[in-house]
Structure formats: C-alpha cells, structure tokens
Image 1 (cartoon, one colour):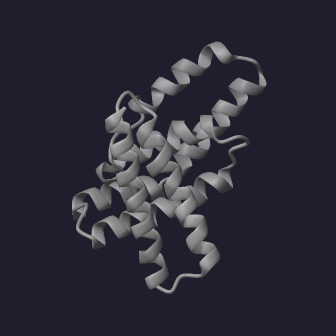
Image 2: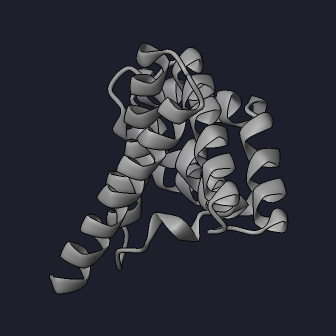
Length: 152
C-alpha cells in the first residue's frame, strides 16, 4: 500500500506542476481545467490501476496506446470519439510538459505524440467495444482487451 500512496502523491504533484505549466503558457482557464482533468485520468487512475502502481513520469507510446485503446473505452461511461480525441489532445500537452521539464526525452516524446496523433485506431476499438456490449457479446470482451497489445 505504501507504493500506491507514494506513487499517487508523486502523480498528484506532477499534475499540479502540469497545471501551473499550462497557466504560465497563458492558456485559457477552461482549457487548462480540461487538460488537467484528462491528464489526471491517466496520472491518477490508469497508473495506479494495474498490478503495481507506476509513476506518470514513465509515460511512453505503449502506455498511451493501452490507456486510449482499452482503459478509457471500458472505464469512462458513454465514452465517445470526441472524448477520445480530447484526451489524446490533453496527453499531447502533458507529454510536451514532461519533455520541457526534462522528465522524458525526445524519443519518448515522439513515440507518445505518434500515439496521440493516430486516434483512428482507438476510435475503431471504441466502435468494436460498443458493438460487443450492445449485442450482449460480453464473452468476447477479454479477447478484445488482449488485442490492444497485438495492435501496438
């Protein structure tokens, strides 16, 4: 439990720094709020959801792929294509912040941006998931989930 608490506090501080970063850039207050809320989905929920908590500083293309391609589709009630695109935009800003503060390098930034810019795969996965759920094919959700790894 101590790891979870430590990582959660670290990620909360990181999100606060991200918020200040956006404000210093002169970004509109409502846009700052939206980006912070969306990045928090990643930093405060996704990173602490798996087998062991991990710092949001460890973001990379694979983590973004799994987050956009599986996690938010299943965890956000009534997830929409617009929401996936909005979250991808916020993650782009978050990654630029991490790069500018020296937390990630150019390679990780480029890999992350590539995933954030190619939302078509996540929109297709959302459509597939919604079709499975609406047709009552719950037994196929696990195989749908596992394909996220194959599609990276």
